[in-house]
Length: 297
Image (cartoon, rainbow, N blue to C red; front, side, top):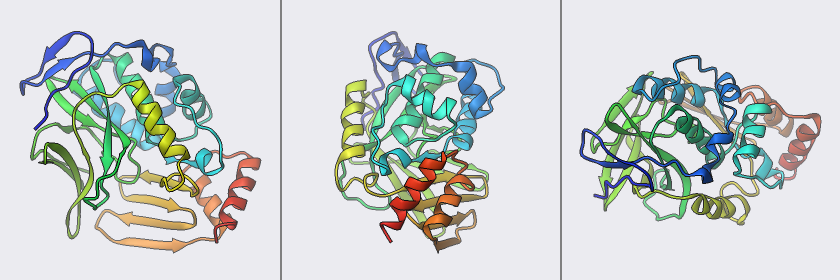
């Protein structure tokens, strides 16, 4: 099992013996984050410190406030991972973003709090063992002498709070459960369904750099056949329900395991984007999104 957690920087060791190297590279642009505005956007009012309590509270605040969405990609717009562009969209305009945007924004805030952070690219499973390219981002964070998996940006199954990076680690928060296991030299994140544990994604702990994210983002946001190209994907996880919108198919998953699928009309789907997912859309965006969905019926 690969348990190395490294970057160029100062080496630390946590209670489990994992070597940690603090990444202070300027390539992430964390110094350009308007931290006050970001914290106001996610509603975090706690201490600005590198403690486990602060990590948990900030993780939950980000998950609760920033929706997973690919509206711009669906409408054929270019999406930038530059931190200035990301915070204009998510912090200033109140929009969401897909994983590269939202988790890299969260990582910048962790940098500013003083947490050692490693940015990872991971392979989505979604219940399948098929090997896919690394299309999702997650984070490893050191807090209170332990390494934690942090991922508020996954969407409908996003962790509510970080999960200890330890084989067999389990976490149940507000009735939703996750665990980490290992398989073929990879860590495997799962969440519990009524029928048992469901694979979300697999990852190794080697750090990725800005150029790696740019390449993965380019493929995810432009390649035909990508799950984010040519269709609308909007997801949000709440304490009681999880919501998924794929074009006009709207799925609600309840904490007890019940699922409800509704097929919406295009104008109803736009209303759900604005209402259930709390995304502020301009009148032009509403029109464009309606026309996009109507063309796919």
